[in-house]
Length: 369
Image (cartoon, rainbow, N blue to C red; front, top):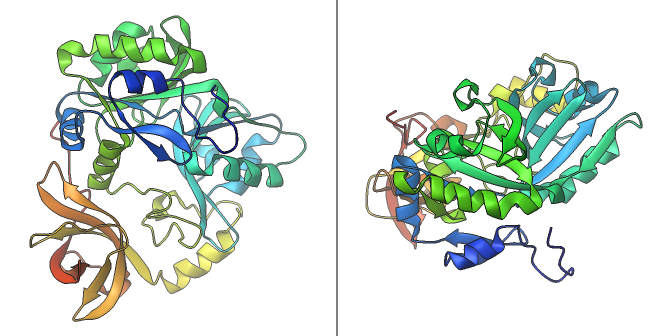
């Protein structure tokens, strides 16, 4: 792994590949990452209709092993980790005592008392320290982020693109399940997960193996229209699905119930950090609701724009874009709960102009296959 000085940005094992492919490099969460290659709309369309390749090696990985691992994770996380079967992954939220979000993450059950956790890039050190503070001495808790290159293959031709590189039975891997197998002869975790709303896989491979796998995937997918894709398209794709992003829809001052993540908050299980606060919020009802807004007039909503009703501020946009799939402005926004019903018309203030938006059913986009 590239280990720069403290005042330098970090690089993934695929940095030279991005430069070679003329990727536009930006600072993202302290990493030099490609925001786009051929253009955001083109890359977005490639993932929706063919297959796209993303470098997501900036994400963090934590390994939890040893006696008491299950009890530790069930105390730390909102979802019921006891329900995860071997080879299954589970979306989860980690909370503070007041119910605010430390992070959202994915837990993979590798074996009995053996869990592999993927966390957000900007939160890796913070998350690991939070886990370390609450872990019993019986556990082995390791930040293994520097050991892995993570690549996402997303789109309707993802399985056909990945299949020639692995002996794994891709067809047998269900959504949010994974296999421990190999890719091009090296150990790999192959998970049927993703952040785009399309079929696809996120694979974890040894750090130095990344460039070879990246290049071979591009060769394998060449006849299927594969393209490397940047973080820009990843963001528009996840916005069309109304997937939460830390720092936008969830953060320390926002709780999972108002963020629409109540389905991963299991208040009936044994107490976990933040459970008391979340029970109180559930009893009184969240004051805000996270909704999807669709523009009824010309204008592109962006994060931080105010939402108004009859001239009164009632909410705030957390994510917004011109939807490449729908060709219309869309936004994810927190609004007062009493104004959160589908069909409600609200104004988003865009450059001092009030632009009418309607609350719609989400996700904004549903794949046709």
